[in-house]
Image (cartoon, rainbow, N blue to C red; front, side):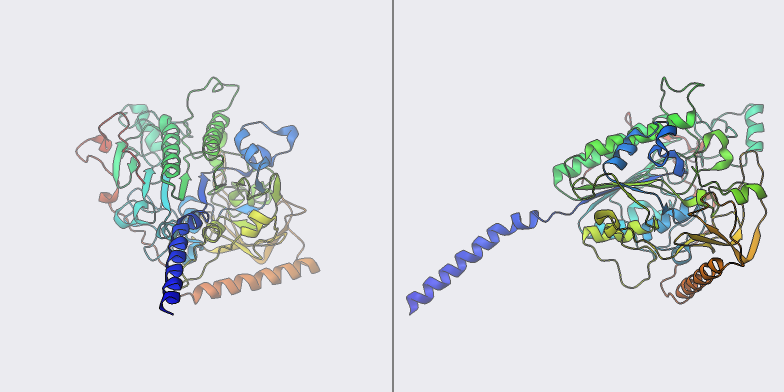
Length: 536
């Protein structure tokens, strides 16, 4: 009997040893996917060639066109807000600005940023074993705990806010043009007085992790710096065998535009188009770097084009906001007209996303939060309410179901910051308040309140030209449905105990400054590039 027991015990031990021996390979076979999220700045829906009719395409985005052909192109995808900080906060948290507290932009002298009570999806991926890296524009706080490396990123390289929020030695193309940092000529002083947005006291900084690498940075080499760093991150992650999130918030297509020297950059080829091609080439380099790997690339925009920049602004395509244009002012960035928030969006994932698919699902940049976490097998915290949805079915299975309602907040054109003043459901869109941003040429439209709301049928009138007749049954049914949806959401936010409040206070000492003893805080780190090696 003892011999039998010994034999059984020995067999059990050997079986356990065999199982343990096999466990690592079994675990390794269930690898987590990689994610590259590319966020373009101030890009128009019409800037993506794939969104245009073939006969009018300009071939400015061949790599993005190929990604769309080999993946999924969204036709009804929207930024969560129509300006920088609110849009980025909503993307990272999956929550409207009325919940996450970020309703308008932070500035150079901002003390704080995205409220520390908010949780970002990079934080959750980081906790789940992902290497998380960010390159580019942050614009959610550049001091202490508000920096990217304290909000879920292991590594950061970029500009802490927009690329026009600091002077440079060789300014890019802008309208009106800003002078160089150290210029003290009468003409430069006149330009500073003319352009309220020209920064002369602080150079535009390039930050790596928590330190300033260069101030002022070189706009004309920034794209190459970003590309080199991104490729290094991808290659290092591949060598380490660690899943990664790479969030690239591009300077393109925000002014000042500073495309690399090109034979195409002449009077026959616009500066904007050349910059667009440069951005597309960067996307192409990233796409090539992840071939034969389990990597989702998701390209989208933070808001529509900055219309007042005229020849340096992008195209809204057919979404012109004609009703507003006739009233005066612009209808793109900062507004809730379609041109302000409908953005070009493409998802590419060989072997997972079917090729050459188009989705008309009503989706938002907030959905990146829930979708990426779902694909990574990471559950979000249950102590808060979210506004984004899990779009995995749209991404992988050709689903066409998106939001029942999508709400567009005021981003500076009319009303109070963050107010959900426009509602979308199916083909209908209701405006409770309208207002315009500054148009090319300087015209502005006045703020108007609408009761009953201004209602458009986007299926029949994508240019938002002719409002529906309030006396029709279709109008009444759609207006009632959207009013109920809006009231339900506002009540949900009002009773949400996880709502955050952002600190928008400012101090002169809060501005990033490498060397306060030198003009414009000028400095340059040791070495040819100043950048440290990226270790995972």
